[in-house]
Amino acid sequence: MGFAKVVSKPMDDAIREQLDAMKAEHRRLDEEIIALSAEPVSDQLEIARLKRRKLMLKDRIQMVLDHNTPDIIA
Image 1 (tube, rainbow, N blue to C red):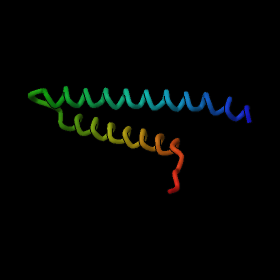
Image 2 (cartoon, helix red, strand yellow):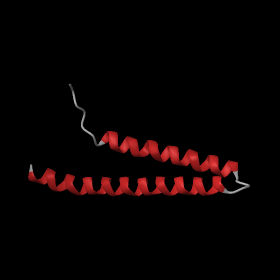
Image 3 (cartoon, one colour):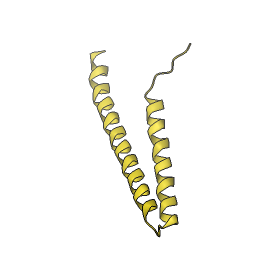
Image 4 (cartoon, helix red, strand yellow):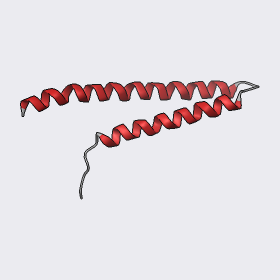
């Protein structure tokens, strides 16, 4: 039983680090979208690509969170 805790602890840290990295990337994309949108002549295609990438990243973050959240049966 102690072995399972030793194995799962680094896994939890690894998942947390992965989530932190994905959230940081999500914020960076948001800032980039805002900066591009503020330009007088903005590249709408690039903004659309960034928004799509940001949405896919948000979905991945949610999948990781859902996968690591225990189901609660009420």
